Image (cartoon, rainbow, N blue to C red; front, top):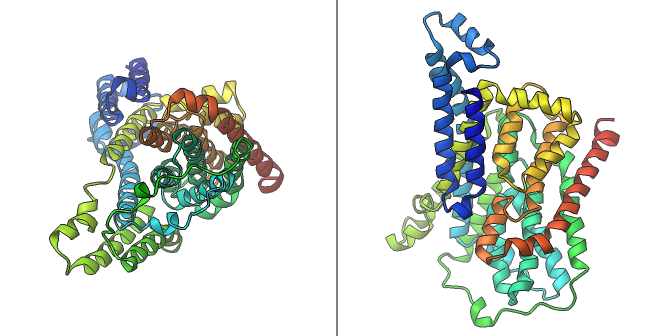
Amino acid sequence: MFTLMIVVFIVGYAAIALEHPLKINKSATALLLAVTLWVLFVIGGEQILVNTLPFREYLLKNPDGNFFDWLSHHALLEHLGEISEIIFFLMGAMTIVELVDSHEGFRIITDRITTTNKVKLLWVISIITFFLSAVLDNLTTAIVMVALLRKLVGDKKERWFYAGMVIIAANSGGAFSPIGDVTTIMLWIGGHITTMNIIIKTIIPSAISMVVPLVLISLSMKGNIQKVPQKVVEHSQNPTSTFERNLVFYLGIGLLLFVPVFKTITHLPPYIGILLGLSILWIVTEIMHKSKNEEYRSKVTVASVLRRIDTPSILFFLGILLAVAALQTVGHLDLLAKILDQHVGNLYVINVIIGLFSSIVDNVPLVAGAMGMYKNAFVTDHYFWEMLAYCAGTGGSILIIGSAAGVAVMGMEKIDFIWYLKKISLWALIGYLSGAIVYWGLSVLVFHG
């Protein structure tokens, strides 16, 4: 059963990576994979455990217990508790972002971009994307910025270059913030990184991973963009007033930024902070819209927004994290960590390899696996965790299928995989490696001596 679990995980992982050719949603595959691995664990029994110490400690405290009690009521519940913290945080953050979007709050940023110079526009879009994705998540930021590009850049192939840079900037911006990417959220909630430390240690490498490809792509651009015809640019009838839009935008962004502060002050888990923010914004919007008709309220209240959050992604995270938890509990990840230590050894190189893999497969299971492998090996804010956040976040830009932002932009703009590979991937790879080298240099020479 020990070997069979590895085979099943690889097959399931391949099905997730091949989601689009197979036309099977990766969330369904992840859930089936999780259940299958835990069932195989039950069938294999105590004999397949690499380390039986946790089970023996459970029996000492619970003399009447058995393997199945330990598995169902201790090991599985412990993992589920950790996973739930991530799930509830994501649900709260997604709802806040959707609520801001339903009030057209992001127009406060996008309406201020008026330049038509190709190079200047590329830099403006990239810098806004970089910092916006640190507050929101990289997926939402990429969607907002591509929607903006459709109103600014008329030529499709020209717009693809901007969209490619949006992918790189969104992933780079999400990597240095504890709330900017699912993987950094996982590391933050798991207690492996702290807010100010991850920002200070990785913001420069993350910026380098964006600026290098930005400079290289800028060299091939000249002149002004072909503007979109005015009739296409016109906004639809605004569902909210300017005051409501501003209030929801600034309050929503402020509450997201307050979550790390809340955790620092109270020492409560981040999901408590995000639920506080959601509840405040919920109450404010309910009061704001209480006198309006039902049709209007159905578009802008939290009750309606909750139906639009990305539930399949939430279920994907649940499935893949439960699947990785099964391998961690049995001991597969401990063995993999030992193999990497023996054959690679250097932790910086291990992280670079993980980042390269994240361009092919989803970075969530990669980071979950790394967290499982090295859970008790490194202290909070160890350079391994910091570089893992950087590499897993920015490595996904190398291929368009390597990140949620890339997949979303690919679907919105119908960008060809081969076009991205030819026109963007090399610059993204150079930027990724440049940032990794900068992180290594800063870590050795500045932060860790």
